Image (cartoon, rainbow, N blue to C red; front, side, top):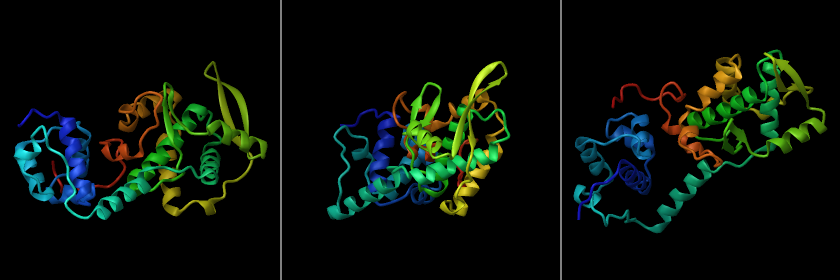
Length: 266
């Protein structure tokens, strides 16, 4: 029996079928002559699919439209279970972050070194610079930079175990916490007392961090907060939950930082 499917249901079914076929979003988008951001929006349930696009998807992913639109439709694996397990493990390896404390400390030190003379860079701005460095790197390279998990809190994304890491760095003499007055408000700032070990950063990682610093480090706390709160990974996450890195692939202009094929029109 055919039913009226929601955009979210359609997106979930397409995502499951794509993964069973072992296709990346890039692979599938190219096959149906669609931009990857558009496909990502479909999979997230934020964009509708017209009948022509659905027909193209049915050809590439190997499903019948009648079955796909039915209430009892289920995604079945037609090949050996090992393939599904391999895909599952690959997805988990990419999407589940593992905090690299030493890398995180050196990224934090590097940002503080670059921004030490900027009076606007208090805790609020610093946390956003860390967040965009991590999520921008993941969107571009599909690998984690620091591996920190960011929780959605009312005032912005905050990396896991931050208080513990800051405490360790203060105790070891790497940074100093100070309170300063900035535009009639008390601001918490961190001053670097040691240099970042740049051997822990790949050239690609340093490049992404540098671009974030160049773009945002002169912004006020209010400006960078307003910007971060319109970033899709933040927007679609429930308050108090961790923000999924995979949501970075669903970003659109001006947040998307990955260079996609401009010839792939919607």
